Length: 83
Image (cartoon, rainbow, N blue to C red; front, side, top):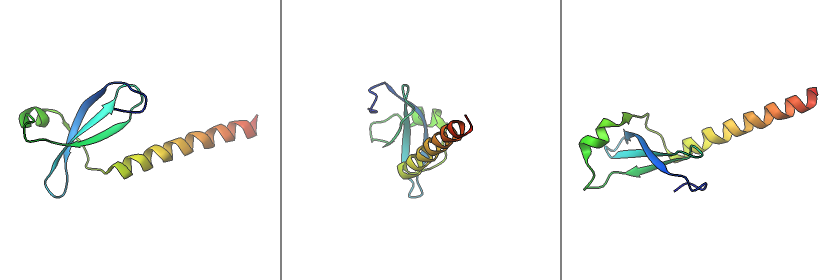
């Protein structure tokens, strides 16, 4: 679950360099992403029917989110300085 408490939906999958498959879930409320390793009882054909995603770590996703937040904050500061 994300911190906003909204529903998480599977949006894709990727394969790690070690061969492990991971399902990507995204929060429908805030866009938070969570990575979950597949389980033995998961329907592998259903997983492969999801869109293939670029392999990434949760660290990379957090860094991208932080960069976007900092850019937005910089834009606000620029507007305040110009105004």
